[in-house]
Length: 184
Ligand SMILES: CC(C)(COP(=O)(O)OP(=O)(O)OC[C@H]1O[C@@H](n2cnc3c(N)ncnc32)[C@H](O)[C@@H]1OP(=O)(O)O)[C@@H](O)C(=O)NCCC(=O)NCCS
Image 1: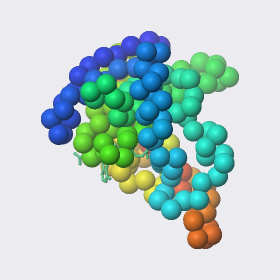
Image 2: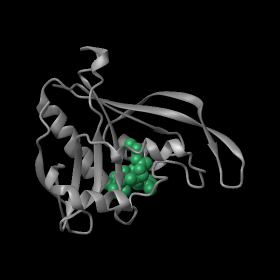
Image 3: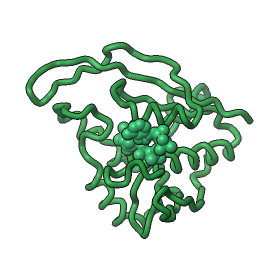
Image 4: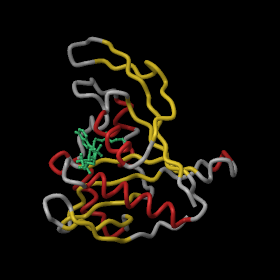
């Protein structure tokens, strides 16, 4: 798998975003980006976070990230989850990813641009046939974004995710699986 990609996209506000994989030279901009991503990103508004949510924050991982850069600042990123080698060859064709766009940059085409770039990159790899995303049921923005890009819901684990809210109430959310099969 080659983590190389570079393209320029025009955002909705007319600005240009450069999309490419993160390199060691992005260290400072990356640190700023990680600081600006809210801890509760991807969680339902009002969720009382668990310490585990912070320690598993994928932005701290040292993995391949496709980033969107505007005027030298990273405004969105897609974490390409490395294939699980313990699965042998069985999962080599499928890539799971997680995406975050900075709150101030949402609804400006950054997420859609990153997704389009991820699909283009994945198709160019040859051996990747599927993209997969896993997220919580409340998350309509991500459902809308993925559906627009051709993803389909493939499954849902009902009430699989316990959520405590700030006022101490408990609720249960679904874990949703959406996928896109890539034709060669
Ligand atoms: C989901 C997320 C990545 C979308 O990024 P974005 O830059 O705002 O997305 P875009 O502006 O490119 O929108 C692309 C499409 O997504 C859909 N969409 C995005 N945000 C939406 C919202 N709040 N409500 C409804 N649809 C939405 C729309 O279909 C949109 O196309 P349109 O603007 O032509 O209608 C962003 O909201 C985010 O970072 N959320 C928090 C992290 C998260 O939940 N990640 C998902 C885990 S994979």
